[in-house]
Length: 453
Image 1 (cartoon, rainbow, N blue to C red):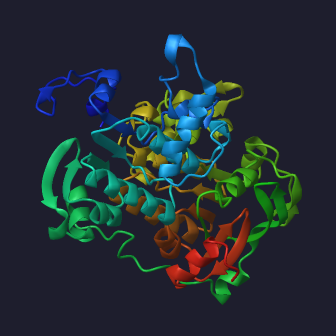
Image 2 (image 1 turned 180 degrees about the vertical axis):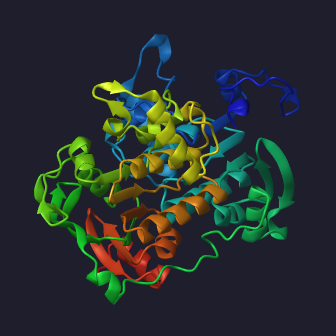
Image 3 (image 1 turned 45 degrees about the vertical axis):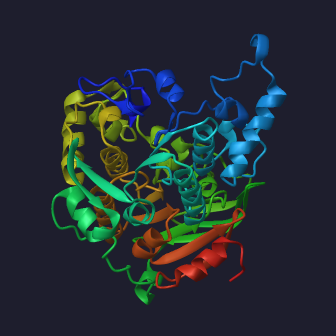
């Protein structure tokens, strides 16, 4: 995708658009040929407004003067096209991950395009926003735009594509028509063997009497950070997996960040292991036994540090002699957790060079290393392939079996039902309903849409 869009220069080969060869290594040249891209790792500038990002690099009007009013007005067109009703003057840094993804899509649609490259465009979107995107894609293809759609979500690949090409380890495995394959066959092509993925895995049993007898390790009462997080009551028991599902802007990520001290609560109380705690920063959250994997991998992984340093980042006293880091000890500890979680890279390798799935496992290894008793996982399978997702699922279940309490936030109903013993639904910054995992998707989606249950 990056080669086609001009941001990476290949070692060989050539590319033709409308029969004419396009030079590699120039995003501007690619854009002039009608190639637009939505990157998985978003390319937005956080301190700038939505409108400024949508028209980034194209601000200058006649005589080299920037007409801010015209830019704000023009940005409304692609934003309305994707159904994103927002003040285009808002700063991107104030948006959630799903909202940023919508801005990135609007940015790609803000110019005349012949070829649209979409790299995991729904990774932070709920089902509702994803289906709106599918409608836009169908409109584009009917008007003659070619779309290359990269995704690890097998149901949406089969829903949106006419042809499917499977890549593995940098090589083309096979190209098939969407009509001749199902999810199971695609999964086999992707990983190279039979896979008992979360698609076939039965949902874990609903909370039982035994679960109810386990100690409450986290209790929140009236926890809030208005206006986007309303008062929330929440209980999490040892060895329990509680899923939290919600649409874009429902408050899932805000709740996670508040619990971990990234956006400290301004109201309510929080008890951990029966003791009232005030979590004002990630430092105090870690000290209280919490671990956090955010929806944006860039916030969890330190890309320019090796895998070993990323794994021990929350456990430095464990691998230090006083104020001096013991590299031998660090490497020994990191190697053990890397092998335990199946991280397919040496511990000396820079974390930024790993695949998305291995980066997620490196962050999970960090919290295993820190002996966290409560894990807050915000969309941990976003943008990773079906094999890595299966491994994350197995790891979460194993941690719960070992007594770790897991708060699993997701934008996919199927994930919540497959993993959680209870599914809490958020809407409008508050918990709108509580469901057993065998509840229907319709009931869960109704609660997510604000219907009182």
